[in-house]
Amino acid sequence: MTIVRAMRTTSRVRRSLARWTLCVLGAVTLAGCGSGSPSSMSTSTAPSASSSQQACSGCGTALVSLTDQPGDFVSYIVKVDSLSLTRSDGTVVQTVPVTTQVDFAQLVNLSEIVSADQIPAGHYTSASLTLDFTGATIVVDTSTGEVTVPAADILNGATGQPLTGPVTLNLSLSSDDQLVVNSGTISNLALDFNLLASNTVNLTATPLTVTVNPTLTASLSPDAAKQIHVRGPLVSVSASASDYVISVRPFQDQDDTTGQVTVATNDSTKYLINGTSYVGSAGLAQLAMLSAGTLTSAYGAWTLASGAFTATLVLAGSSAEGATGSVQGTVLARSGNTLTVGAGLLFNPEAAAISFERQTSVMIGSGTLVTEEGQSGSFTATDISVGQQLRVSGTAGTDSSGNPTLDATAGVALLLPTSGVGVVTGTTTGSVTLNLQQLGGMSASALDFAGTGATSQQDATASAYQVSLPSSISASATSAGSVVGFTGFVTPFGSAPPDFAATTWIGSNQGVAMFDAWWASPGLTAPFATLTGSEILVSQATLQTSAGKVLRIGGMAVDPATLGSGLQLLPDMTAAAQSFAIVHVKSQSVDNFSTFNDFATALATDLNGSDGLVQVWAEGSYASGALTADHVIATLMN
Image 1 (cartoon, rainbow, N blue to C red):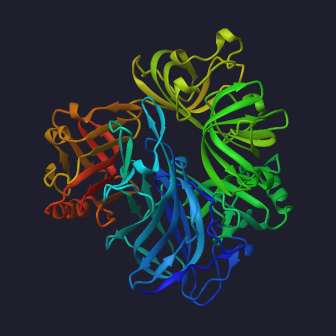
Image 2 (cartoon, one colour; image 1 turned 90 degrees about the horizontal axis):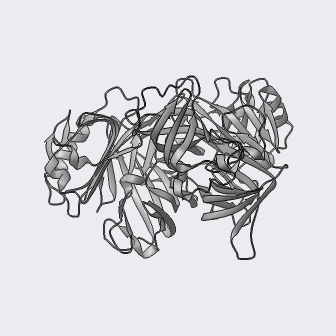
Image 3 (cartoon, helix red, strand yellow; image 1 turned 60 degrees about the horizontal axis):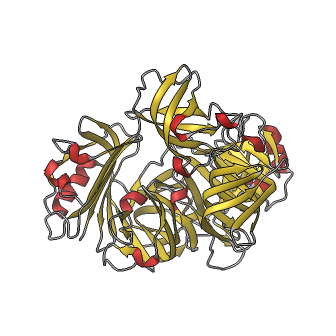
């Protein structure tokens, strides 16, 4: 076996403790280069000359991006030791060989570009991800609050013993799902570390336990619905091509770089540079005035057809993540100019490390630069209110009791789109009143709404939370008692009602449906009433024998045991990206399939052994006892 270390530059050789926040779908994008000659690797449709970089002979440029699906976790911090690809001839390419911290719970709606290295062309048949649970921080969201799981209660699904070291998960790609890297082409592989499918939480155990069966799946198409993030020091700017080049430095890494990437911009791109806002060409001109090596961060979208990554928001200098201390979380309370930020991921640049903090005291003021992601206009510290999710930068420290603090009086606060769930209690034109259940990922009971109203009598209340709707959204069909979801921004502090301005509205029958069920080891050898290339039927009897099960439709949870005819799992033939996988717990391997038929055929064969099914997870759309899925994962004990 040949081992190839992908081409990279590092400021020093070290085992980085930088932040990697992965969510549940990731993309590996590979742009081919000409054999034996320099190539221009760019994510823009019109790459500038400055984007050229020297490629190895016969190599392609691997643009690696990772993300994650949501689970019932407030925080899930582990170390990623390596991510490698294996070619059909046995050549192993380490795309991300530097150890770094990752909070998988933080990137639910984001994919992070983590590498743009050169790798040899060829057919890649498998991928391996090594996770190190030494010192892991796992915080579970239970019905009674947040619980931090001690190391002794984080269990290896294969052995039942505490998981305190590294685990390597090997993902095999089916023959029609292999990654092919050719000269002059762009190839994609979406890697998905699924928190919900990878972990079983036993709420009835005393103390609570988390059993880990790491699950990595793949698709040849990245998730177009997720925002892409890329971060790193500035290399050059091309005003004529409306783009700029950076050396990729993922998450909060302070030293290492993993190749170069070109970021395209347009007249709508917004910039926040050293605390000052710009739009379009004016922002690009300011970016060009910065010194090479200045830290940048960009959010945007990847267009598969054109091979372009175009930024909608660019942060640079002191405004970029990782330039100073920062915390990302939800505002639990506000008193004057002091925020209490809950469930926060705190970054301390001096320690080059991240930590989960239940509460962080954040000081803001007139000098705090405030902006809203995806929104135009002028914002101030008044726009920060209770329930709002945000990322705020400043000087990290501690108070006299050793509790974490962040002085952002001269920092930057980026207000993030915030989601909530509630039960409808009434509707009027342009407004809905809810019994609020959750906001910003926090239980409504954890939020202190004091001061949110124009008067104290008008402060928001969870039992009568008022959400305004834009004219483009109608809630006329929403009935009292229905569970709904919404996304937008909290009303500025001291100005409610309304309490929240929604930009999107999801009825209980409109959201993504997710099914998850699990059984005790050694599992079921004949779990399905029907197992064909067009249908899997989980019978009512099988559902009744499960150790736990849930069916979530939008914001509503349904007990699958109430489905008299069981639950059908059908393939979604219209989905742009499909992924089906069989996880083997004892061998710590995953077989990935691009078609439901291949998946079902292999599953029928694998179930002929003595070790059976211990978990099935599926995601898609639900109607009348059938889940039409674009993602299905079956976990076996073998």
